[in-house]
Image (cartoon, rainbow, N blue to C red; front, side):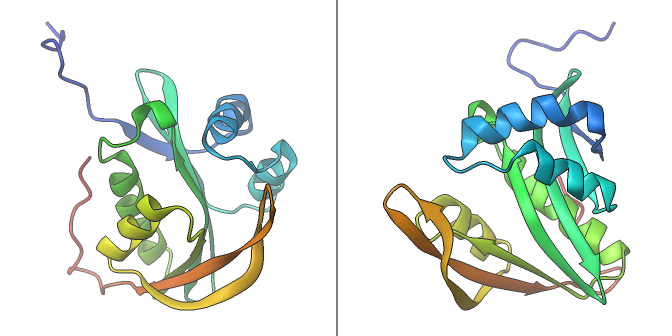
Length: 167
């Protein structure tokens, strides 16, 4: 018997993003961000082979992320958990999984940009070992103009010193 007790969720899975996932990914992107990526941006990322992943549960996509990995560095381009599922540790689990994937792909450090107006994301990144290394002036659009980006980085641990991600 495979039934779960009431209130118990199965562990989500992570798999590579495919073109046929884009409708669900874009729906989450639009529900989470006031200035979402376009479908064309996601398609271009898949076309050029950026590591892109979806977090799924019971056949539904509940999150996703896109990386760029080259020359020993990874850049987290986009990470999102469906707003209806936020606050459950899924974003942390997804981020830790991406750190492991980047390390396995040869990255020695990871970079990202984050809006200063997103304190939950800033706190998550700081909690996971990212440090502010700079700012990109007027990087993000806002309803009133533009907002700087905080540039953050984290060194990736050598093989064998890595915690196992858990949701």
